[in-house]
Amino acid sequence: MPTLAPPVNNERHALREFLAYHQRAFVAVAYGLTDEQARATPSVSSLSVGGLIKHVTGVQQSWMQRVAAAPNEPQADDRPFEDRAQEYQEQYLMRPDETLAQLIETLVAQNAESLRLIETTDLDAAVPVPRDAPWFPDDVDAWSVRWVLLHLIGELARHAGHADIIRESIDGATMYELVAAAEGVAPQPWLTPWRPNT
Image (cartoon, rainbow, N blue to C red; front, side, top):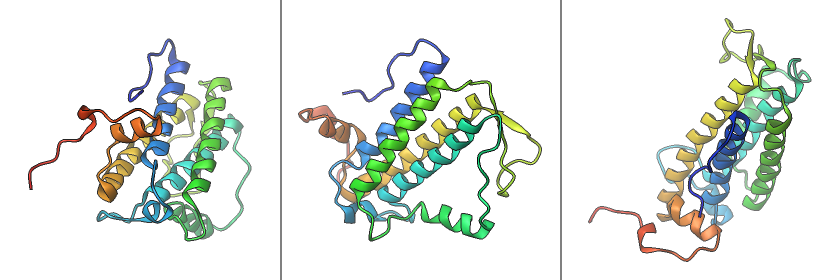
């Protein structure tokens, strides 16, 4: 039951394995949920497990388009900023016509593409900083592919933590339990999370 990234032997291998580790967290955290549970927002946040899966799929897709195009810009999105911003906001929502199985299928396909690019891309290639959104720095011209991958690992780690809290709020399941269940490992007493007496 791998709940840690495996040992690594070089920089590229480390980037790949740590990204893969965080990618798998989203499949595990969704294990056994119904579509309704995946849409649920049981915490004070408006985030759901399904919405987070959509978001990390979209985030990977956007960054990997930039990595694949480096050192050039990816194909321009000529839609008005408001339309692109609205699409970005909708990444966080699992619509009624979407199923968890569909979202996971799309995530798994994007995960594979991201890992493929890590294996083949020059880590020193320049990735131009986008100029089409106000949250990107205007005093940096480009990042390296290496920087982009480290940023993506951090982004997925942060959202995996969000997903853990949401999942535990739904039914009390924790990551160790979910990884074991997803892999068909029998529950062990040490997998039962500590909970205060109430």
